[in-house]
Image (cartoon, rainbow, N blue to C red; front, side, top):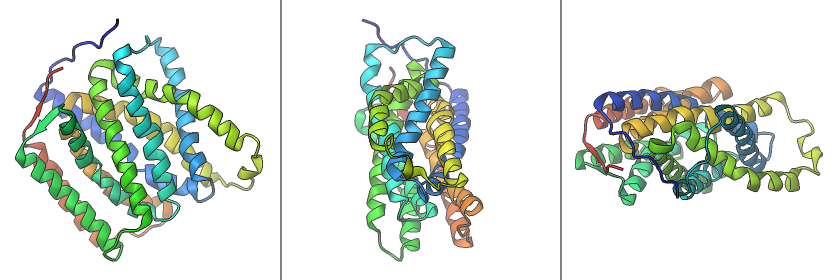
Length: 306
C-alpha cells in the first residue's frame, strides 16, 4: 500500500517563504466575499456555491492531466475528503447563503475568525502546539474582529452571522487538513484532488437542479457572471496553490495568522467593487489587527514532525 512521503523539516527561511506565499493567497481570498456578493445579487446562492466548485474541478482536472500527476495514495483520501467538505462545499455554500442577507464587508469581518479556528483545529488534532503567548495573540486578534462585527451590527449578531460562523468552522477544517496534507502531497495537488473528488457529487446535483431550468439565468447581468468567474478561478483554484504551499512551509498556526488581514483587505475590495463605505473606524481596526499578526509572527509554535 502506498504511503505518504516523509515531509521535509522546515527552516526559518521556509517560514518566511510560507508567510509570503500565504499573503499572496490571502490577497486572492480577500476578494472572495465581495465577488460572491456580486454573484448572489442575481444568481441563486446554491448555484454560485456548487457552480464555482464544479468549474474549479474542471480546471483542477486539466492541471492534473497537464502535470501527469499520479493518483493520491490511499492514506490521503480521508484528509482530501475533509478538505472537500470544508473548503470546496462547506465554506462556499454557507457563505453564499449568508451574503444574501448581509453586506460583503460584514461577512468579511466575521471571516476574520478563520485563523483562530484553524489553529484551534490543528491543536486539537495534535499537529501543532502553539505557545501561551501565541494563543494570547490569536485570541486578541479574534476579539478585535468580533468587536468590530458587533460595533457594525449595533451590538447584536444576526441569523446570517450564524451561517458565516458555520462557514468559518468548515473553512478551518479544510485549511488545517489541506495545510498538513500539502507538506507531503503538494499544495496544488491537494486542492486539485479535493476539487476532483467533489465533481461526481456536484455535476449530477447541478444538472438535476438547474439543467432543466434555463429560465433561472434569464436576465442575469455581466457583473454576476464576473463574480462567479472570479470565485471559480481564484478563490477555489489559484489562491489555494499559494495558500496550501504557504501553510506547508511555515506551519498552519503561524501562516494562518496572516489571514487576520483578510477582512480588512476585503473591506477595501468591497469599497472598490461594490461601493460599500470604507471608514476611519475600519482602518483603525485594520492597524490593530496588523499589529497582532506581526506580534504573533515572533512567538513560538511547535510542530509535530511527520
